[in-house]
Image 1 (tube, rainbow, N blue to C red):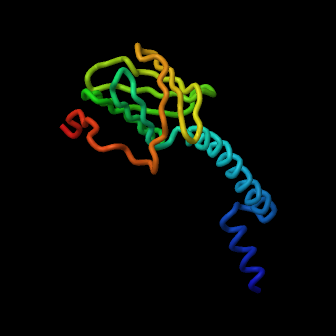
Image 2 (image 1 turned 30 degrees about the vertical axis):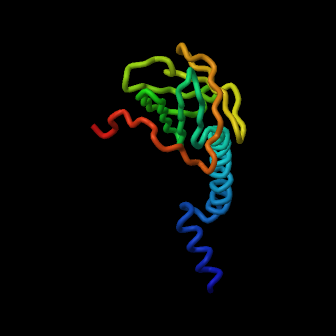
Image 3 (image 1 turned 45 degrees about the horizontal axis):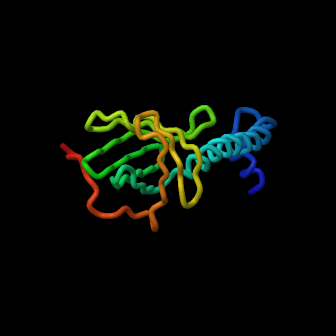
Amino acid sequence: MAGALALTACSGGGGSDDSSPTPSATAAPTSTAGAGDSAGGKASSSGKLQGSWLATTDGKAVALVVTGKQAGLFATGGTVCTGTAGEEAGMQMIHLTCTDGSKDRGTGMVDSVSKASMQVTWSGKVGKETYTKAEGGKLPSGLPTGNLGS
């Protein structure tokens, strides 16, 4: 009787006839796992961008932070930029809008990324910029806030 109840519960939740729920139930997890693997593949490749990255360019400290699909860039002198990061057409891309209107780092293509460093080629005048991953995921203190929250 417990077996009959288990079968009833499976068929009641899985579909309208007794023969399709079992294949559907089997196909659904496989299908979901396949979609998860695909999304997981993208997440893991854009996951390499995740974290806090530091660079020094033209004598200015630059911090690039990537969390999920969100990106933020802060540079000494008051530059604050926000935007997105992730995979586009098989490439890792970063798109930023800066509060000061600067287009120096508007769109960046990630040339290479490892556990310790990342190289980005920006479409603006900055060109190639090499970042080092911040230790422990922590940024140094004293970064500009650009009047965030106003």
